[in-house]
Length: 395
Image 1 (cartoon, rainbow, N blue to C red):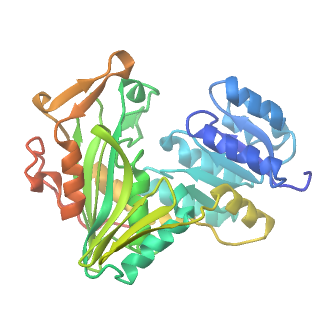
Image 2 (cartoon, rainbow, N blue to C red; image 1 turned 135 degrees about the vertical axis):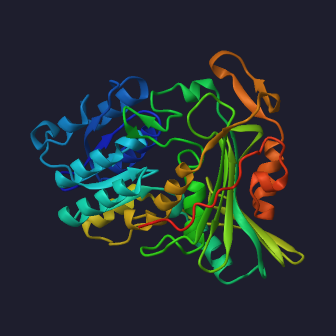
Image 3 (cartoon, rainbow, N blue to C red; image 1 turned 180 degrees about the vertical axis):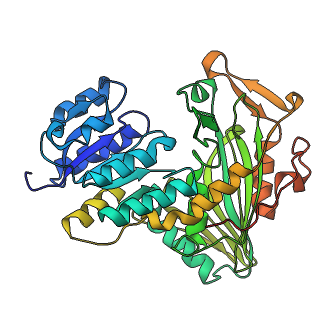
């Protein structure tokens, strides 16, 4: 175990708990030594038990964790960052400057300026940065990309992602940055499109072949709505036009009538395909046939360890492949957020479990992707926003 790379984790709660479990799995396999973690909340419950098993030292200040002597085992080789997105840049740059490679939770950054700053730190330090878009490690995404590239379902009619989740009051009050556009002068840019459903846009960009360095988006049209008392959208749709002439739509809500897991959908003249991207199975219908194909999923943390060990130089989601995603986030947050009139908003649950239910949203989400149209173009009664053309993002 002494030769295994030393790993640290910033953020042990929320999605950080998922990373902690994966790091423990890799530790048991002899792939990593998990020597340090940091969080503003002290370890308790499952987190405390895991850190005890790992012999992992806890720091209340992530800056202290990155100092070699306090970490207790020399410099860290890998740092996993699962903090609020607006803190990612400072943490990742500091980790790189401390000599570590980085696994950075999605969304990697919230502005193009932050993106360029991280690329600069990588060039300066030689560090690698893997971004935690987990589904990019799934073979299912490669299959979806193949279906699109080879026009296996005939001429493309539409493709995109539908997402229908429910989030209650507790979700929006869980942290000071939740639901915020700006906090303390810093760009936070939370919201359904850029945070919980960030995978939706990234998967479409990868499937369309425009996530590689140098790719550009031809145009972005955005509509953002809120039924909650927040600064950002809890419901939105975005249509992305590509240089190839194709377009895709991501239509999502956190105010669903009925929950449905997010699905990347492709419709062609001769059939259709669907990939619920939280899993690894693609369903395909072509002509009179229908079938499913199931694929393996690679661990993004294990891939980064392979790079550190010299076993591989390939990452499923290197930061360099997130340029168009960040361009898209810039376009989303350039659009206004429109409040849905109260007569279209119902309510379910009580207390902190209370949540708004947006009338007609389930059908609107499905129709937007199926028809490659925005909510306002569908005649949705509460969709009053003009679909502003943001245009080609600047570098």
